[in-house]
Image 1 (cartoon, rainbow, N blue to C red):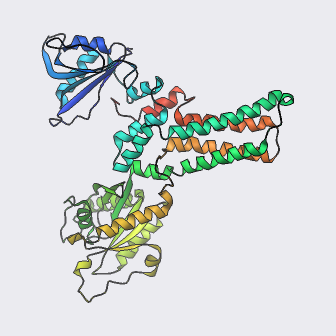
Image 2 (cartoon, rainbow, N blue to C red):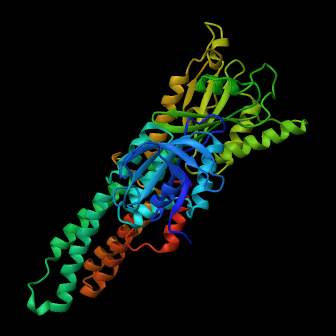
Length: 464
């Protein structure tokens, strides 16, 4: 199999892309580019220079595209190998033709994430930086992009390496006593315990960023639920400042789940406008109600929407009981009292049940006029922060894989502390300490097996 890989490195939109890039990396990248790319004049083929010319089909000798060619000789490249990029006209056809020419000339199609995997294997980046590259590509909010960029710059790897280095120093001191106890002064156990406490304290601080980091990466799923004609679709339209959902006075207009992507307080939010939940003989509407219930079950936060002109009804009570009956430890419920603009000036809002007022925050809105949206967003952010996902430090944020490894390190270090407290021999100290060192190394990629790396990089897009 060829050691030179090729892939389309840009998102391609049919008939809309302005520029498309085909990237190659490997020992044959330059030679393949020389065969495919014709440069007029006396342009110099050297590293980190952009050439102008034409991509030609070797078999037909026909020009495929007028393009630019970027040359990057290793190790001064993304992968530390020779890399070339054909910067073509965008759209599907041209870049696919150029990619096929590269493959016909001796390259092979890259696997998902293989360019970044080579950068990791060649020592240009560590595993935290590689994963941050994927996070940066998929970032859905400015803060998510900022955190991912911090990871690319090594701000997560550095504290992990320092913790691992401290653990290695402690292990060296202990093992020296095991082998040369008679030739060395007694081990300062109090100092070892102090260092372990400091490592655990910093480890706990890093672990505290896991929930917030996951929230910024995957976003918050919010379902707008309620009985028909309470203004759920109007609320979605007012919130997203668009006409995503059809709004009429007829109950049951929404037959399916309508989605909208928003950003609230730097948090990506996927809003789901659901069909009004009620008993119905209409088969299509019944399917919509079933999907509404499924959306509410999967949501992180439910906006239970009520009609201020009608107050609390038996149908509202039934929906509330359904939502509360679904066991979801992290789900948040917010009551939205909508259509406040339809109340008379001297008319008081309807009284809500005591159990709702005591357990659930309430927001008043007039969705048809776009009023109350800011209050709704404040309530959502407050509920999220009170739920414990506000990290203590947002200079970095770990992902689920990293959190799992750091948790193993945390448990191992706590076991070391227990072993010391039980006055066990030094040999027992080293067992869990080695486990902590191995777990910390997994975060940055030290000691990772090939199957583990394949599983991580398989989630990357092809071309990155």
